[in-house]
Structure formats: C-alpha cells, structure tokens
Amino acid sequence: MLRACALLLALAAAAASLPVWAETLQLKDKAAITGKVLAEKRDMVAIDVGYTVLVVPRSQIVQILRTESPTKPVSMPRSAVEADPKPVIDANATPGLYATAARNLPAHSVLELVNQLGEAVVQVRTPGALGSGFMLNEDGFLITNFHVIEGETQITVEVYHQRNGELQRHSYKQVRIIALNKFGDLALLKIDDKDAPRFKFVTLGSSDSLSVGEAVFAIGSPLGLERTVTEGILSTKTRPMEGKLFLQTTAQINPGNSGGPLFDLRGEVVGVTNMKITFGEGLGFAIPVEAVRYFLDHRDAFAYSNDNPSNAYRYLEPPSRTRKSTVELN
Image 1 (cartoon, rainbow, N blue to C red):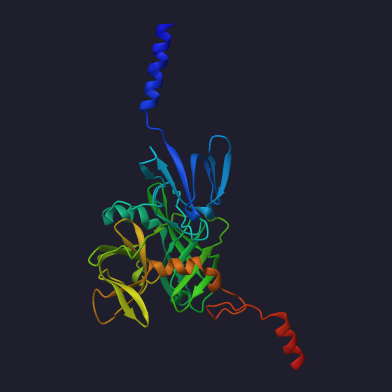
Image 2 (spheres, rainbow, N blue to C red; image 1 turned 180 degrees about the vertical axis):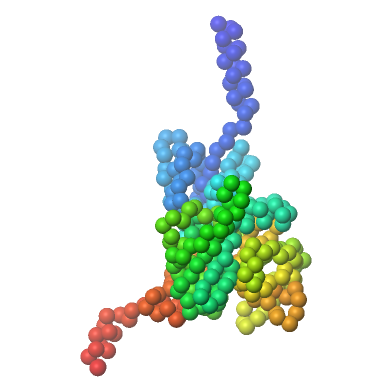
C-alpha cells in the first residue's frame, strides 16, 4: 500500500514538472478566453473552457496565444511560409483574406526566403501588358498593380507550383477582378479555375517598422524574366510623388516587376513594387503595405463592376424617389 501511494505521488510530481500549455484567444475590446483549442477553421475556432465548448468567430479574434504559465505568453500561430500555413488574420480585415504575423519573425537570408516564398509570387498577363503579383491566401486571391490590368478583362495568372522538388508552371485563365483602386494603383484579383489547388501565400508585414538602410528584396518578372530576385536596401520610407508617399529602394525594379512584392528579411511583404526612375539606377519605388491593407480592408468601396468596367469605383443606384422624379421630369 505504501509503495502504491509512493508511486502515485511520484507520477503526480512528474506530471506537475511538465509544462502545462493553455491557449488564449485575444478578442476585440480587450476580452480574452483561455482553454484548449479543439479545432481551427477558416471562419471560427472551437475552444474547450472546461465546462463547455465555445465556438468563436474568426472576425472577433485578434490573435491566439499559447502560454506555459499566465506570466509567460508565447505567440502560437505559424508563419504562412511554412509547409502547412495557419495564418493569423488581422482583426480589422475580412476573415481569411490575408495573413499577418502575430509576432516578430526572425530574420533569414534571401536564399532561404526565396525558397520559401517563391511559389507565392505569380506572373500576371493580359493581351497588352505583363506584370507580377502575389497570393494573399490559399483560395486564390492575389494583389497586383492597377496599371498592369488597366482596361483589360482577359487576364492570365501563371503560378509556379513545386511538384516533387521541381517547379512546374501552370496558367490559370479564369481570373476575376474583385476590386480596383486606380489612384492607389492596386488591383485585387481571384483565380476561379475549377482545377485550382490550394495556393501558397505570403504574410503582410509593416513598412512603418522598417528602418532606412534595412535590407529588402523583390521577386517578380522584369521584362518577362519570371522569378527574378533583386536585393537592395530601403533608401527612404517617405518619398513624396504625386501627392503620395512611397518606399524608395535600391533593389532593381524594371517593367514586369509591377505588382510584385517587396519583402523584408523576415519574409513579410512591406510594399508593392510599381515604378522606377528610368534615367537612373537603383531608384525603385513601392507602395507601402499599409496602403495595401487599407485597400483590402475597404475593398467594398473599390468593388469592380461589369456595368462600369472603365472606372475604378462602383457607384450605387440613386434612391428610388430620385429615380421616380427623374422619370417624371422627362
């Protein structure tokens, strides 16, 4: 009997010495729920709080934390560049549209990041233009420049999938325009091909957290040379041009790079490359990622309309009373 009690005490002590993990859902309005996450879906998270299981909408979750003790929170979500991505969705964004990192990711070499991120960078083709773009999520939403697809509806997106250690090019021709911002030079597209797989995608970072002189690199298709990588530094974060602020970089930007991502060494998108000064070298420019996130979060205001394809904005129908008065006047 004494030996049995001693054995039970030893097992209890061993269990107590193991780290006890709990997960905390940080919600909007500074609320939080702690328990064990049972399931994570695109639109919800199921968490066991001991006496019941709660289903929490993703739109209400700011981030998920994993804690060893109440005083040692460790951010749990994995980066979207890993093999099985589970992105952390920004609280102000439409759930599932794009991913952001819940913590500061470690820096890596360009070589390492290119191997991880290259599959998420795509080539965008129209009958009259060629540019670049990058995938926002596994469902086929992607960003490019407005000027790459301006005036076009016949769009092809070329993606390089990794199959058995090799890259295989695949062209997707069922591409739909979701939103356009002509003055911000941004376009949101979606691949609707029936045979489309789950796409590798990138995370959106912050250009505000960058320092001048910090290393950055671009991936794109300059002059049609797909998957070209150019490296440089951030020359300035606040270059005013035509009433807007742009990131200036020494990373080489050429025609065909337009719409492609500018990355920092954490593998996060900090800008969308869109222009260069043609009579100089090392004078490339990118739209800050904060402007991209604003465009995505408010994409309903920039929704593309087939009824008015030449305009970047969709105008709502006038109120019925106004329409009736107009008819009577005529």
